[in-house]
Length: 207
Image 1 (cartoon, rainbow, N blue to C red):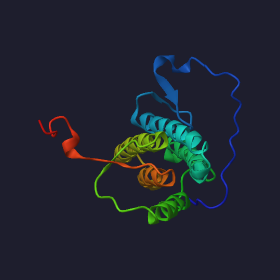
Image 2: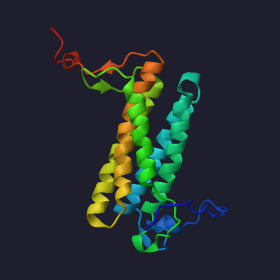
Image 3: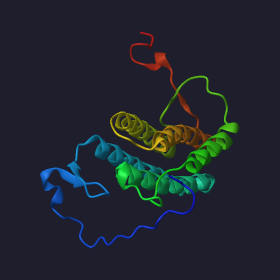
């Protein structure tokens, strides 16, 4: 199945928000199949939706500062890519249309380029970092951890059902990107990174 060319634009008419079809704990896939709302496929693309929401929070924060405006543009693109990912995860392989939105190798390669560009000017790490230092840094770490959870669920889904390999690869690369973004934000805003210090714990502190 080719990923070349443009995707189909959505053709939706969301006139009613509630339908009551989900009251019995079922929902429909793109192909019309009725499945339980706690099915692994639903959990997986539901977590991708959650990830999209937290990336949106970070995107708004990044757009509030001139220094981090380039990151806001990246995160907005990522939100569209995550919706594309949700589209393909919500569709069984036999129902996938050739022009259906999805994540592709091009999306993964763009993440890799951005990781390399941002990471090039960052100082080497001497310890693990803790979320914090500034709000945007913490928001990006929240997004990173949700992304890792989505990746774990995608791996579990792929073990049970056929899924596109790009889905897991994209989430893996995105979690790396969000980590680098968090470090880049600390640098451009002049905020010190919070490094893990084992002896800063209550049990490690001198008595």
